[in-house]
Length: 475
Image (cartoon, helix red, strand yellow):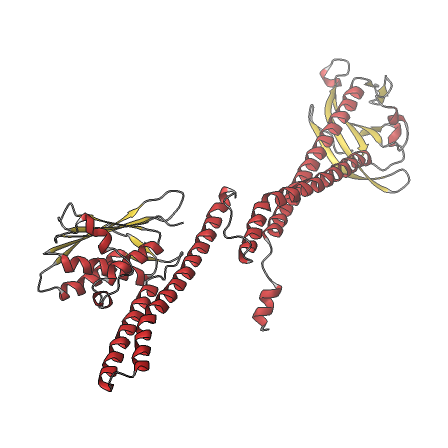
């Protein structure tokens, strides 16, 4: 085994099911990850907004319940809005910044909070900051979120007694962190459960959707084993072109095999008579050497003609289902140039009515046989004019176009009751072997191989015979 073969065997393409399952799984994981990130970001922002609003409410409540003495000291008239303000190191702190002085709540006694001595805010100015580093009452590091609002104390009403002050309310970040961790654990747990359920459903759906393809594979395997003659027609629309192509290929191969068998049978049957004549001549002993030589020559020539004829028929049956398009006009021009030289004495000219770009889908040799025999027959019987017509036959459903070929001449034409005789198959005779009658037989075999139709009638344009070939649209 070569290195390339080893690589191809080891790195073989993944199955369709594996490809789709892998792609869908990656997409599902990416979607759940983005959804989890978006939910986490949205919840985190909402939690911080709620914390800011709660701290603002504390600050507003304090602003309505505090007074200042004549010496500028802070005096709280009412109970704090939350008992934690009176518990040292509780995690909820108050700082009031006044000109030259900072007052703290009982809870702020012990922890080292951020310095706010130079953090006076303008009146009605609000800030929300965090997390900010602090030192807990037990000496461990911590973090807090801080809300501040700038206010003005009115004093006794005189403008000179007014002074600005700022209220800061701080809360330990551990509460918000616990909320975020609890939310993240719940979100990722349920996203994981949802992902597993979706992955299971995805696998089931994928198996269900690929079941028709597996059915096609099973049917094809049974066809290969000889258990079925063809693919069934009960398949989804997406698989119909595939099954139709397989059935067409099977039918084509069977037709080719049958044609080869028939050709061999015809050849064997045809050779029986010349061989029997030779054997009789040899066993009788009544003929002299000259007569025997002459008879052997005649029979050998006859057998040679029979073999040539059968080989010609076999050679005209090389139809393949999937072939590249062959231009009609180019092939026809080459054939007509040769025929116009052969029939130069008659002065026959060939006119073209060929749609630009029209193609024949098949073997180039089949097109040459088809056009060559039809055109040669027309040149043979025409007086002066031959007309070649070629146009595509449009088809729907994405199928390739069919083809209409017609050859007209201005000769005597063919009587309707003689058409069947002219197209008769299997006629033996010297003129067929020499190419004077085998042409139309080859044409019929070719048209049958391509599932087409041949019509012979009177030419309305030139008045002679019209041979019209119709090849159906391809699959």
